Length: 367
Image (tube, rainbow, N blue to C red; front, side, top):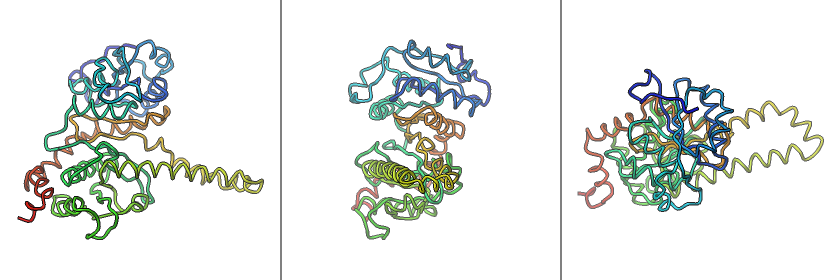
């Protein structure tokens, strides 16, 4: 399975090389390799650069018939444990996650995907890939369900504390992400707040909202939105700080699990309920498919010099395949170039750094 894959410059046109950390996740490497085997059928133009402990990869690769001739193995001697602190992870020079990220930095792979330690992934990508010019901090974004279709939310935990500049940058990146992955020509944007009225919230959010209204994406800026607007689908992109975003994400995941558990109780409570389940099964199967968390697996670290996708550590092969779908969407549609275009639009009016500095310091904004 260690077939030779040519360097990106020598790859046939329309073919993309994705680096994979095969040792990250609760069920790695089996769930990772099985997920790649599923994704290989969906993405015939994808080839995979797999990093991991070779002895652990042998059996799952033997089963993965669709990967024949489409992978190259890069053996590593270390893996980053899920409970390892990021500072300790930085010292593991031959870890599968680090080596996969380094292949993107070297221009060998077009993007990287890992189901491993989130803190380590954040630390390593920021140090190795670094942030784009004009971006202060990367943000973690993901897609979730709503009453009106899929919705993008960021930041989901990469930045516990933010300022107005960060929120403006998140809005620019989230807008590009929604256009790329959801295919929306002009996605609407909302700033998560404690109320939808303009006078609500702290000064940071007020200044960010003011700047966004005056920005090149001002016509797409809806204004402030509240927690219930996430599930309602009031806007296509929800922008917030990582602390609030992570709480909202985990609350939503818990609510979906509660609904599933309650439905199971209802339809197993009696013989009549079981008969009702038989009648309702087609609709319930559709609901289960719509709310399946595997369908939304694959958070993206935005604002880095390379495509980075974080799969949920506890997902199965189907969930990992969905994370590959997200990575391939971003690579094929040249997502990072779209972010750079968005930043250039802001720069045409004034540099984003100058604008953010102005909205982050009231005395400058007032002057």
